[in-house]
Image 1 (cartoon, helix red, strand yellow):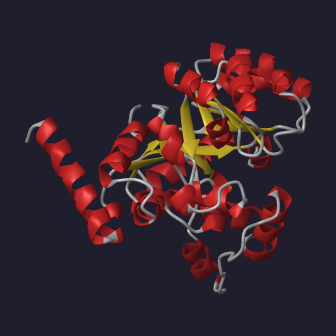
Image 2 (cartoon, helix red, strand yellow):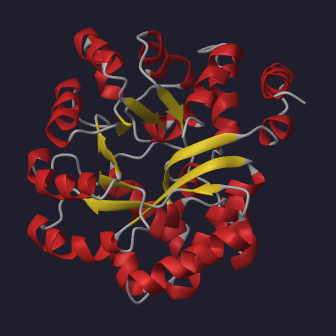
Length: 320
C-alpha cells in the first residue's frame, strides 16, 4: 500500500468518524497531544477505578488557575496522593495516549518532579519505563516545564546538569503569566536552544496579543502553548503566520478557564484562517475530561470547523 493511499484512507476515516459522530472511530486515527501536563494527563475514569471513588468532572468554569488547582487537589489529588498516587497519574497519562492513538505525545514535567524521584537518571529511567510499558507505539517527547514565578538564577544553576542527560526535547514556562517579565528567561532559553530543545512557552492564554509577540521575539520561541490572545490583533496574527509560529491550542481548557466562551466561538477559527499553524491538545485531561478525539468532535459538532479543516490541523500536529 502506498503512503499516499494510506494517508487518503486515514483522512477519509477521520472525516467519516466526525460526520457519523463516532468517537470510537476518531480514537483509532493517529493524532498528537503536544500540550499535556504529565501528572494531570490521564483519564478521570482510570483514576476513579483505581482509587475506587466516584470522581465527577467540573461542571462550571473556574474563576482562576488557583481555583482550578484547588479543584484538582480536592477532587483528584487527594485520592491519589504521595509517590504512589503521582506514579499512578503518570501511568494514566501514557495509558490515555495509547487508548486515544496519540502518535506524538509531549508530556511536561517540572524540576520538583525530577527531585522527588531522586534526580535526572532515576526520573528519566522511570518515565521511559512507563512509556515502554503503556504506550510503546507513541513517540514520547518529554518537556521541561518551568514555573513563571521561579527563581531564574537558581534554575539556571541547575540547568546544565538537567540538559546534560539529553532526555528533554523541549522547554516551557507555565503558571501565572504575570509573575515576572518573559525577558527574565532569556538566559535559560539561550541554554535550552544551545542544547537543541524546541522552545515553547505558555503565553497569550490570559495575556494580550502583544505578550505573545514579545515572548516569541525575546525567547525565540518556535511554538506557543495557547496563544489565543493573538486573535485580537490582525497584525500579530499575520506576523505569526509569516513566521510559522505554531500555537498549541486547548479548547476545553480555554472554555473552563473563561478565556473562550464556547466551542462554537473559539478563537482557533480565526487563527487558522490567518494561516497560523495550530494544533489541538488536552492541557489537563484529569481536570477538563476531554480527550484529543473529543476535542475534535466538540469543534466539529459546534459548527466551528469542517472535517477537512480539522484533518489539516491533525496533520499539523503530526509534523515532527
